[in-house]
Image (cartoon, rainbow, N blue to C red; front, side):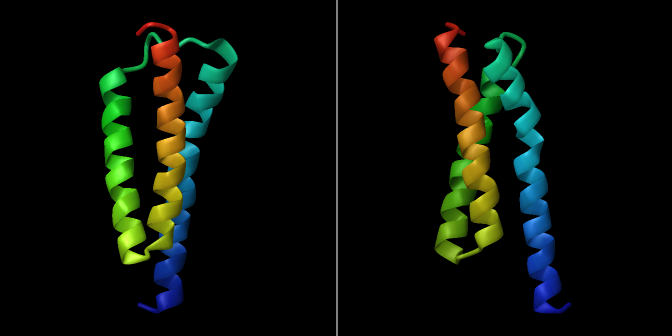
Length: 87
């Protein structure tokens, strides 16, 4: 497969991955409610995103870096709100 196609697939996946959490983050920011969200899920998401981000940086795989940096910010935002809510 041509390198451009492979890179395009990676960036497309990265963009989709970023948009997965945006609706949830917007809802949390608007309502400040996080009770129904699993803390364990978002902690695991943070851990996975951190590891993937490290991998992406070390391997210079920029779609992986982009997607996981954004995922880390969004998942951490939700965890911060859960902590503020005493959950």
